[in-house]
Amino acid sequence: MYNNNHAISDTAELMASDESFGVLFHKVRDNVPLPSNTALNEIILLAREILFPGYFGHSKVSSETMKYHMGVNMERFFRLMKKQIMAGLCFAVDPNDECFCVDETRKKAIEITEEIVKKLPEIRKVLATDVEAAFNGDPAATSFGEIISCYPVIRTLTNYRLAHELHLLGVPLIPRMITELAHSETGIDIHPAAQIGHHFTIDHGTGVVIGATCIIGNNVKLYQGVTLGALSFPLDKDGNPIKGIPRHPILEDDVIVYSNATILGRITIGKGSVIGANKWVTDNVASNTKIYKNLKIHSGFENGYGI
Image 1 (cartoon, rainbow, N blue to C red):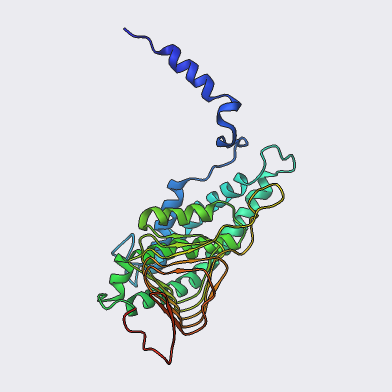
Image 2: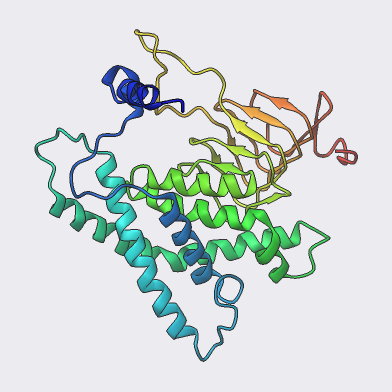
């Protein structure tokens, strides 16, 4: 019989060498947790059940049992979230940092978890406006319940709005993992650092990309395939990309962007403007402007039909 022990042992030795794995190996301290996609997915399912009771999770919840179910779910949410925030905080620390203190990090994780729990009522309030925007923007929608149960934008925005609050609280890695779970589920890619106002919706959704430094106002609607991205960004003296600079578009209130439009760079799409399908936009667009084909049509001169 053929003996493959040498092939396995030789390859294992090669794969375990510093030269082989390089930056692909994450060194961890003893007794500190690692971020878990499985646990984060459980947190998201819990968050949806908390934010939209009766639509996700336990379907037989009633007004009489609401407080009980909410208490149980919130306790579980807190416990799981605390552990993942702790994992995110530990992940960002140099394993050779002698000043690292597990107890202090755990205390910080508890404080952040308390803050994110306090944010849940406001997250629900904003998500309610997103549900309303999706319903009002789609003649095919028959009820708010259909929007909550079926529309990918609500699942995505639940992840995003939770992840955004975690980002604002300074949690490393975990916010991005949460939005990437939504990306995998719905095909909508929203960076947790993006700023998005109320009454936001994405019709259909698949293929939408919203970059980290995007600022989106209130009552904005996107269609499938829209990219709010960056142009080539500047390099430092060593030829490395300069990070942390605003490089994505600003969409002011009441903007509509139709399918497969691409808007790139730190430009502003003015209030009430409409970007037609398949357009490539790299310059500022004035308020109340309609871009259709290769023309800019200002309101008052054209009714905008045909966009």
